[in-house]
Image (tube, rainbow, N blue to C red; front, side):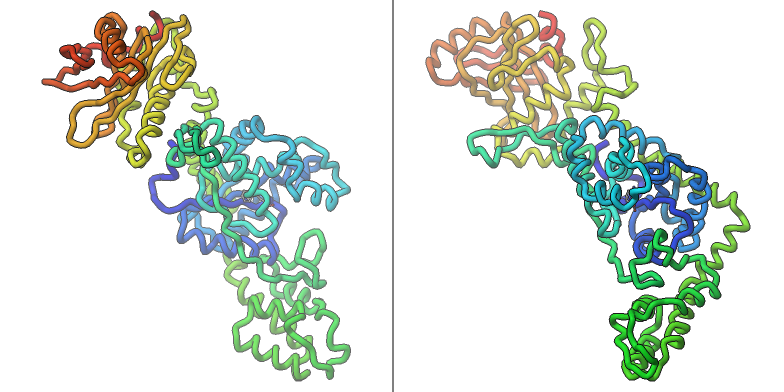
Length: 529
Ligand code: TRP
């Protein structure tokens, strides 16, 4: 439920891209090229963010489906392999939308207004009305995209880092509200303790950015390559088109005549060579440029042929895929089915903690206790071994709160009063004391304040981290308790529980043990006394 595990134990990676139409070299080098490498190392989920496209293009969705198809073909042509990673369309996995809605309940509006891309994009796309609820929620939808897969890493470029940062903050807030808690020492207040989400049981672990190195990739006019600038070269471009575009490229305003030397380090065509040419070609044009022995048009033709060479396998795969469009749609369907399975795993846990699970257990009708099976599952702490290294007073607090939150079926009936004391709905005082078996000593030793309680609850954790919990009504121990209290005066009453021949005995000082075996795991009296 809470661990980032799956059938295969590779670390998980998730990323997405908006369907802007056929991808250009900038989209490719800034993401896809890197994804193709990641798929060999990680369990990868890559999707086409069609909901995100609608946050800005809601007024005209006529190109959306075509663009989704083109991006899918580019994903596959560039070398994403559906046998190695899951490729799908965001809206085909409705769990993204569901988690987005739930995260919207806990996300302060100010967090979204502060995301730097919010105002930037509104400025840049001034022709569109982006004063919408959906556009404000853009980065939160992205958080849901990410968190629903509980990934370890999110490969993105620098421009998306603020969105992953928001994702981490939202996850932290969600965990703070809903993940199982652990009592820890409050570092800011040495005298106190605080409840914090148990790091071993986080429902939405915070993912890390895997920053995609973004090489300098200029468009044909020397500005950043971007569809909206009209300066891009598509990865599916025909060689003649690549040639024509590269020949039209800016050289950075150098070499007023071809007899003048230039500096390839500040030339956009030089940037293309650095990305796509083999070292000897790069060396040739570099020295040729500096000594004015290679002309710009020669240099550009060589750059175009390096690019074409790199894109050749991509073009070939596109041609094959375009002959079988149904295969592309089927890959997306299959990817969505796998992705939905993983996302549903997260959502089941999320629905359970937000009160939205359709599981009918947990709602009590009249008098009901946990089933034997549930009770024993809840009480086996073997999987939380790291708890046992923490200091005993905190351990006891954790055990108590676990008992109250996870085991006792009547969380609502008990209000925490003082340390270890709870009051039932009808005003009964319950004292809850916890002890763990220590060293070679088989007995559980308790030391509690000499007060009056109507019910004594003893949580006895054995060495194998299994809980024996006794709900001891006053009528069993009252006489002995009063005597023990009187003798203790202001000191604590020390007593113990011991297992003898398979039965459990409560030993108050100076008296023979009281057999409390039959009071184990019977919570009924607490609620209904
Ligand atoms: N906003 C991203 C972009 O514009 C696309 C995206 C949507 C995304 N959801 C995501 C990227 C989740 C990474 C993870 O490029």
